[in-house]
Length: 185
Image (cartoon, rainbow, N blue to C red; front, side, top):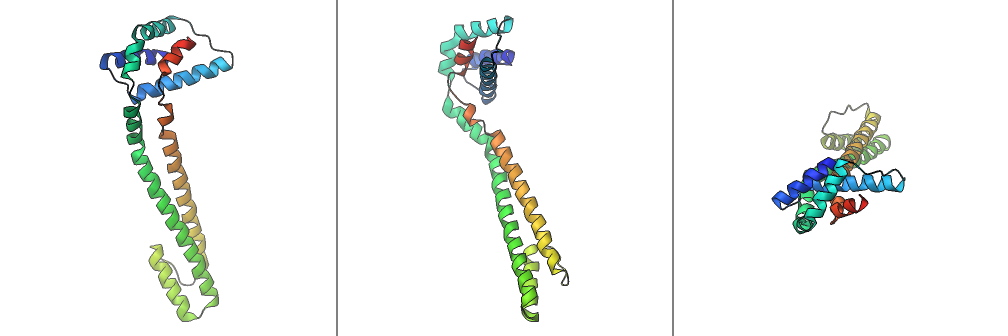
């Protein structure tokens, strides 16, 4: 990881701008080093550590000048936009499935207590909302089927929500990460 961060610093110095990937790698390296130091197992030596210190010390001002938090946060926000859209779609689908399940339970209640015409109206309305074929003599299965659909929609929503949380790297955008790594070395 340190070799990659050295290469990232050289690229930042050459181009004059940070990339989100370089920032995330540096944050991950710092996090790893802080955890190792906390556990008392941080042993930093070797050519890579010396090269890191040398590159940082020679170019500390250029690295500080190239840091643009606003651009990095905008890039991170663009990265998760499609995932947030998928998450919102999954949230809508989960709400629709929950609504369909509640409607199936109401229809089942109507089926058990109402007359023939009310039963047929309720079944027709449920068929229209469900979007799949429902048999007239198996009304209890609709509740179970819509419950399964609701659970699947909730699972899909949770999975898409987790994808958004995992892809959100905005908290890793902090100034001075390279300097903190150099101070640990």
